[in-house]
Length: 345
Image 1: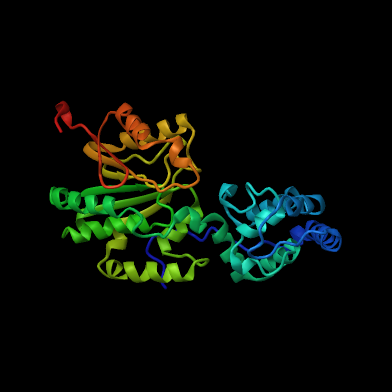
Image 2: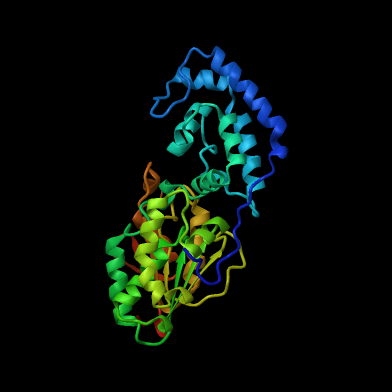
């Protein structure tokens, strides 16, 4: 699979094993003591973690010890500072808990030192593990078709709007890019040509930028194959030249200047990555400011674990109104329109 034009340089590198020799040896010694001493079962695929298993794991093989080593590994593997909140080590209560969060192809042994050694010696496994750590499937869901009612609304919007000159769209928090390609699908469905549309996808992590720009998901090969197959006809029409991905921190000042007809921000506001009230308010205001007069901001979420209760749809709608947007429904989620000059809509 050839990379799309303007692809960012690969942000991934293979660390030197010599950087970790002492820490790896220490972890190996700790595991041998753990395996020889703990009366509880060692971590294994499908194991139900009891208090005793967690206690024994922490007693002999503290998660902080493992976490420090893997965080060093992440830093040595990337050309940018890693966003460790997505990794299986970030909130794990013990190595036993962490083990069950690993991809099944990493659950071949309960020994974290053995896993670490394999990661440093196998470039393919290393790449898959890094992508699985920072682009976990629980964050990106099924990729395409997460918000079908919103997509139907967007198709109708393109049909009404897209013949009035160049249409500029932004997919904020685009992840691995499937939602950005769905915008292209909607535009193409409405009869627009690549020259009539300009799209951008913003995400925090440069690794996601690379994945989105190249439709590259080495840790999810079946999903990558489906991704490429679904978008290849659009690539053949030249749509990739109208889509640019870039790394942008929505909580920092100095966003790229923009003036968009449509902004999407799906799967972010009020979820595990962005839920502090002041931060959500800041991002909503910033995205609203990116809109042209008459432009739309759309936000939809499918959060689990109670996140949706921390920021309800009505509370999000209130934040839209506070940012000067007129609110209505647009399929799933909330939609807000910036008034045109003179207050007319």
